[in-house]
Length: 400
Ligand SMILES: *[C@@H]1O[C@H](CO)[C@@H](O)[C@H](O)[C@H]1NC(C)=O
Ligand SMILES: *[C@@H]1O[C@H](CO)[C@@H](O)[C@H](O)[C@H]1NC(C)=O
Ligand SMILES: *[C@@H]1O[C@H](CO)[C@@H](O)[C@H](O)[C@H]1NC(C)=O
Ligand SMILES: *[C@@H]1O[C@H](CO)[C@@H](O)[C@H](O)[C@H]1NC(C)=O
Image 1: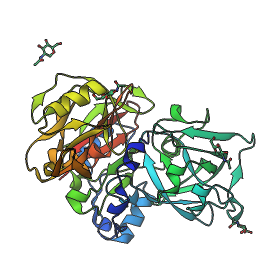
Image 2 (image 1 turned 45 degrees about the vertical axis):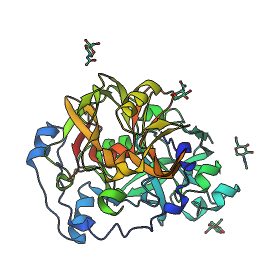
Image 3 (image 1 turned 60 degrees about the horizontal axis):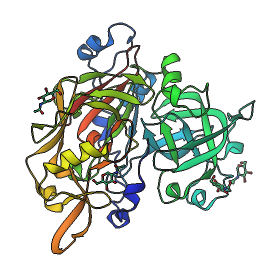
């Protein structure tokens, strides 16, 4: 959904982490996949385990419908991106994989705006496979934080970790200033086709599944956090699930409305204490924080010592050292936690009237929204499998 305005206001620019060499360990991932997923894939997934130990075997995996995209965490867990090749020969771009939207768009090399100039745009004239939309339709997308992009559409070859299909893409000839300050060249929507800004366009996942390009009809998100791994590692895995990254089995939470990855949140628990609060929520890799309605965000913070509201929810930074406590979300009968240490999201200064006390922007914020948003603060603690089989669901398990 891309809710990031609140983030840009907290002076995160100084907390930039150098781009990690996030590719060094990825060739050791054992993958689970099932080339015949059209049967009882959930049961089969548990049974079928294939191990790969070298780049050669990963390349072989891509032939079998598994694409591994290493993830970079450039700025304090604010956004994540991975390489996507577009066109022939392939031009590589940093794309933000967003389960809260469906369009794929990136900056066009013809885009004249200041924001675009900060990115290397896609040059469609130097791709031998690019085709302009015959109806010359245009796209325009506005995200939850007011950021936007617009331009023309066409089709070309899109390659994620070796999975390559022909796909409709948007080429931006205008983008908002928010994107200009980001390292992200474009967004790669992983939501359902009904969210596409141009009606009738199908998503990459829908097309890849229809073409049987994926071993499993899934994309798995493993987001690296500064606290857990220094921001290194992480992946988006197309067509497979890496069971070495999480504890126990995945809990499959059914999707209630296809559009976003919408699910029922049955309760929120603060350090085990129930708020007795249920609502619809979306699992959204494109939103940095957890966003709740006003009343529920207030209830969460009423159980956190020293928390207060000052334009946004603020908590003592000392929370980042907490080794106990959590904000838990009950999904399909199981509670998935965000450790209290991650509720102290980013330093914002000192508390009003208490010069010595460092305060942090909370990882849980509020907005007037029709659904709760479980963004990266949640996902960087819980492996999420976006499973687009006939009965779609999100498989979730706590990270190791
Ligand atoms: C795009 O590619 C064409 C053909 O290779 C080239 O002539 C043109 O200069 C490129 N445009 C930009 C903006 O790089
Ligand atoms: C980009 O879009 C904004 C908002 O719609 C508009 O004000 C601006 O003039 C556009 N810029 C260009 C170059 O089209
Ligand atoms: C939770 O909500 C139910 C139904 O509204 C109510 O019966 C119950 O007393 C509530 N429990 C707590 C602890 O607030
Ligand atoms: C949300 O809560 C904050 C703090 O309690 C308040 O200042 C703000 O006006 C509320 N917003 C809405 C839309 O109710």
